[in-house]
Image (cartoon, rainbow, N blue to C red; front, side, top):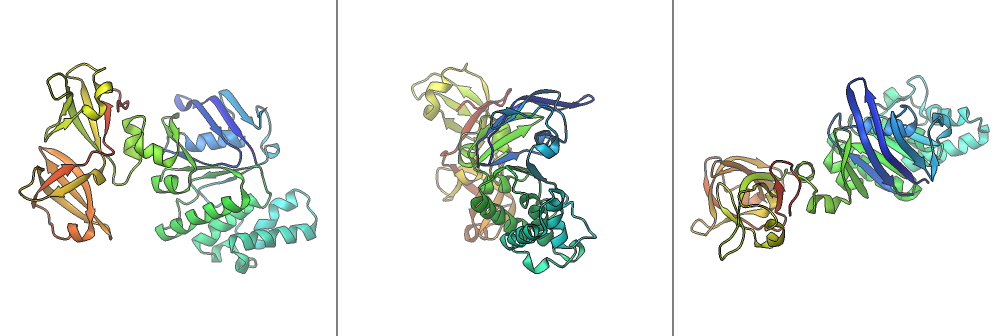
Length: 364
């Protein structure tokens, strides 16, 4: 296992700045996820760690040793790419054995290691078959097997589930967690899929435009995003971001005026009073924090634009005060409504967050 530290890492390709001072620290034995959209810098970060790319600046250290100038083969890392990178003319056994032959391992030990790895990955039944005859899940397990069979100190996974269908992705997420539990190897896993990130990462680094925005546990990323970018990435359906204006003074305390309602600002009183009256804010409302109320209740009037059944839940796309909103209701509740229906909604506010409109930084 290994502890990894990146400090002020930079990398450019001509005028494109892929990494802009990346700072990361991954603990020994941790399953760490690098999460962000396409072209955010995830793959470049992994390739720099693996030694496939040389950084323009910054420091990369493993277990306190600077890896500057250390060639790929001496870094004792294994990387699994988005493409499975299997040898099509070799059987599963031969694909697994190849890295060990490169290490000049004895034939008997190779045979033992291959069969142990195949059993761990549940692909023993494919040992005599070639990749073209394997299912997508079996090919992915074989690609993982080629990485873990050397027993490196660090695993790097670059969007390994992108080419699999939804069912296989679900199965392989569980497989990654099982393998990490059994092997305990330090792992860095890059993905643009928030479900993957939240379900398998012990900690997650959100990366955008070559910079790390926030590093935290899945639950804290959801509950305490540092800015509107992180808030928008974490949560399904995505958070509603509604423009609001800060009002101060009066006997009732601070409030945020939104197009469809006035939000009580007293839960964030101390932080809001540090701002100027009239400050433009974005109110982040989680879809799960909106609820339907009785027709004659005190809720805000809204109109249903679209209903999206999702099995056990239904997503309602609403319009309130000219603002689009999304909310989540139970499937049985959602089945009672159709597009065009008028409803009344209320805001629970448990996970409501406030962001500065200009910078996107979280206020409260």
